[in-house]
Amino acid sequence: MPDGENRKAERTRRGILLKAVDLASVEGLGGLSIGRLADALSMSKSGLFAHFGSKEVLQLAIVEAAREVFVRTVLAATDGVEAGLPRLCRLSSAWLAYVEDGLFRGGCFFAAVASEMDDRPGRVRDRIVELTRDWIEALEKEAAAALLAGQLGEGSDPAQIAFEIHAFLQEANWAFQLHGNASAFRLAARAIRRRIESEATPAGLALAAVEFASFGDVP
Amino acid sequence: MPDGENRKAERTRRGILLKAVDLASVEGLGGLSIGRLADALSMSKSGLFAHFGSKEVLQLAIVEAAREVFVRTVLAATDGVEAGLPRLCRLSSAWLAYVEDGLFRGGCFFAAVASEMDDRPGRVRDRIVELTRDWIEALEKEAAAALLAGQLGEGSDPAQIAFEIHAFLQEANWAFQLHGNASAFRLAARAIRRRIESEATPAGLALAAVEFASFGDVP
Image 1 (cartoon, rainbow over the protein chains, first blue to last red):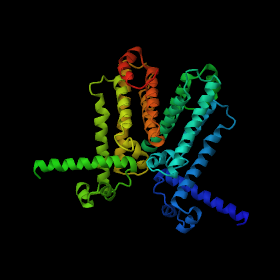
Image 2: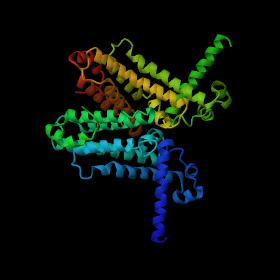
Image 3: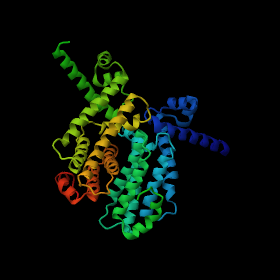
Image 4: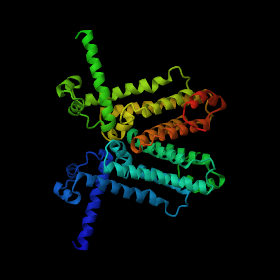
């Protein structure tokens, strides 16, 4: 194919996948066959089949599309932000904004599909496990950098901090999706700020102060 | 029917429902039709239909069966335990044990079905919303009792504490189900203990000490 047609095909593919991520955030990934997606997008099944070939290839492509959105909206928010506590706070606030802004109807794509896929061995599950691990490790890496830079006190445990912050983020998404509880974002922001402040050194607190200011109405 | 037959029918019904809760903890609730359950239990579809009549009635009965297990294994663990911090700790440790013991293959039933059902309006979703709210309110009630009894310092916010403890519990279940991370239970126990200790009064700490002792290897 000439370049122009290649680019056009790629744009079409991306457009399909973004709608598929949105649909999967609501309905889950397991039921998202090529036929179901064709119905939902009012496209021909054969057209979608030409793009993806099988249900597993489609599901894997949806997971990668969700990852790209995550990288663009959450990880990219730390560009130019200092490593350690400032970046740990920025990752947290960017994640809360990503869910609160309703980018996908069902909230966080990975939270929506994790409990569905955790009992279904295969390449799709493996990739979800890998990406969700990467995300927790990204939080832990910043906590470890904060410890190394003297922003957190010496007794701090980066794995423990990452576990707790990740718990608060997922809880906010869960409470918002299931209970429609919009105050969950404020509760999560407050919990994260409180948790970081409980072990930060004065130098760490000073550095993170700019991030905390945009972080919720913690007294 | 004579009493003996009534009791036998009731036992059969309960046996079916416990297996259905287990299956739903793995496969989700949406796909659990009378036909699918009949396959999984090697029973006749007409026999199951006689017990439940419709998919919605079956799903609601499964939710109630899961609730009964929850009451029996988690809420009942607080019998004879003092209100406030001791009972808050006991609810937390009983919940962690309930998931760690692998009572259902897919972990906590409500965690397994919440993200699946949160976008599906109807009686099943409404009941899940109600029961998960009740559980968070049970945690908040004990935090409020602790505050009233002077076990928590005056600035403590029961809703904030319930949000955080519930987040740690769900995170342990999530990390164990998806990542097979058994250390998540220890991380959660440590987080909960640390959170309670951060706002407990000396009197509260003394009261909760017995519970903390069985709570994980927090230094």
